[in-house]
Image (cartoon, rainbow, N blue to C red):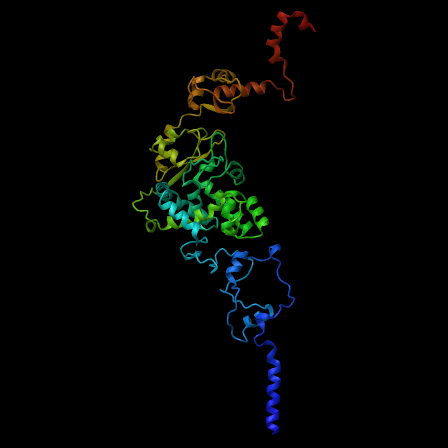
Amino acid sequence: MKRSILFLGIISILCSACLPYMGAFPHQSSPSIPLLDQEEGASLFTQSELDGLFVEKAIPLQKGSTAFRSNLLSGTAFTWRSELPIGEESNDDFNLEGFPKDQTKNETDFDIPIVMNARVEQFIQHFQTAGKKIFSNWLARSAKYIPLMRNLLRENGLPEDLVYLALIESGFNPRAYSRKKATGPWQFIYPTGKRYGLSVNWWVDERRDPEKSTIAAAKYLKDLYDLFECWYLAAASYNAGEGKISRAMKRYRTEDFWELSKYRYLKRETKNYVPQMIAAALVAKDPEAYGFVDIQYQDPLCYDKVRVPEVTTLGLIAEACEASVVELKELNPELLRGCTPPGVSDYEVRIPCGRREVFVRNFEALQPLPRFQFKTHIVRKGDTLSAIANRYRVDIQPLLEINKLRKNSRLSIGMNLLIPIPLQQAHMRTVLARETSDGNGKKPQASRSPLVSKRSAQHPRRSAR
């Protein structure tokens, strides 16, 4: 009897301890627990991503599990779909099951995040159909520049697959020019190019230089990634500017490019920029898989570098290295006037690969004696070729030849003309300039005597004063 009473007592104690939780958690009110304020941007995930990570329905759970105890506190049964690390890193590399169409590609194939979704597929389809001819030309030209650009990106500590930004920017055309006055394979506008060390003037435009512009683009992209810590946002900023993307992130309180692209604030060009880059990378890395066959790929860029004096024409350089002027123009697209710029005594130019020794041997014999000193004249209103020649006391023919003009050529205001001043004449000017000063800023009497004598003969009274 005592044993029965003791047994019943133990059962009643156990029941009293377990009954408050049995079957009650789905309807229990949530306790007062502080939650993250999403309006303050505390979450690294967008609301749509959170909706995909959590399921708002009851799911049978094992008693005693951590998730079971958490559900008791919240009053809702949910489960975490995938084990994602939570931290301060961007979530661009994660494959969220909430977006069944977003499938991350094999990371070993790319060194930038590659996601397949409907928008990327749309651009792939465009490249395969309406844009196939243009994209085929891009692919053919890409073989010429990608090896060089990949090496430069790697040397500057950047992912090599960022080279496909140049593919969608210009199709690897160094002379590509946009309505926004951006030019070169990386489509730099003047202020950004200047900020990253690219010289732009009447004689050269280094935004067209495939080597120098790639180094500048690497520096710019690195700065953008350091700012946003996300390659998608860095790429979008490369297109729209970092200020535009920063304001969009602040306005919509998200760090997800795909979420930002849902709103009207960003232009369509910027919204399409990242999926277009991904699509271009996918196709360019495996063109045959996407129907691009029989592409006539260009040979990889190969060149030697030599240094030449100022205002050395491409014709002379081509003759020295036994190449054509067309080849020299292809290798030096930054030279705008067919010659090296004035004021740079040791300008570096590219010549075909393996021609350095030939160039050195021939150039010494072909190079004319330095007979000219060059000055630059900016054309103003009312200027004519004959007036300019008279002003600098030079023959008009050398002026026409060095500037590739004819006597009836029209001049435009702001145009830069190269004035070839004979060295003998320049030397005489220097000597006269020295003779007209005695070192104290006063002109000596000897230099004024001829003029004074002439004036004295004409106006004796004035000279007496």
